[in-house]
Image (cartoon, rainbow, N blue to C red; front, side, top):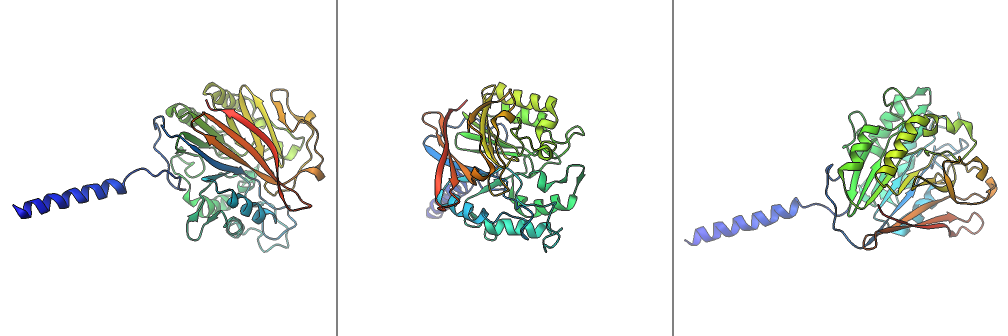
Length: 356
């Protein structure tokens, strides 16, 4: 009987050990995501993430990335967020100084980007703070001539660990993941949908918006739905160039009470509201900054920040810190900007939004 007791004890120990190994993780890891259709989380407490994007160079460097990216990465790492959302245009990609050794070397450009952000996440060891990325138009090639080599390099490097739960053909490009009481939807806008670029996979988005009832829902794409600049070149690679599809997408966010849409593409920080959904443009991660004129904001978007014109010389590089308060059902946004004279990080925009 003694051997039977020992056998039962051993079976019990193994059962406990295996159950511990297969339990859900509380922290996101690139390449993993909660299954579609997850139920409402009962998580509580406070946690935060950072949003930034558009870190390409101005074509005068030889690296493909902005010289200020390293400083931004160090500041973001010091925030100690749970994870990062990056909203596209990592590198120059398609247009480089012809004297650069990085011309057509897309893997090299992405390698430079990964090295620059290593204070946040070390891609060599897979350690540090997770970064969830989507691509921008500079990772797609010219609007009328997509370059497969850029996409291949992107998928093999920076995006290699992204979740693969997106629609067929968009794995690691379009995806979702959950964290505590929140769901995050990341959308690629450069795969042609029904033969049309600068659109989203609307049927997939609709399913994602309705499959999960978590109180916090965050959506990220590269391009603004409502453009806030007169830069005609960038408009041609944005959602605004397809207004009918854009309107359907935005209505789906509003109908499902999504509180906020993060994007970049325009090299500045601008926040506005339409149909109860905030659009936050955070394209000031290192790419050449643009002037802002409130007169360029479409009437469909109610401008909330900044409320005055900002000269190009007064624009600042930065990132956005989002702090989620699960107990109160709200989240705060604090914009951090780099003072070019003192080198100090200062506070810009602040806002508080209630979850859906």
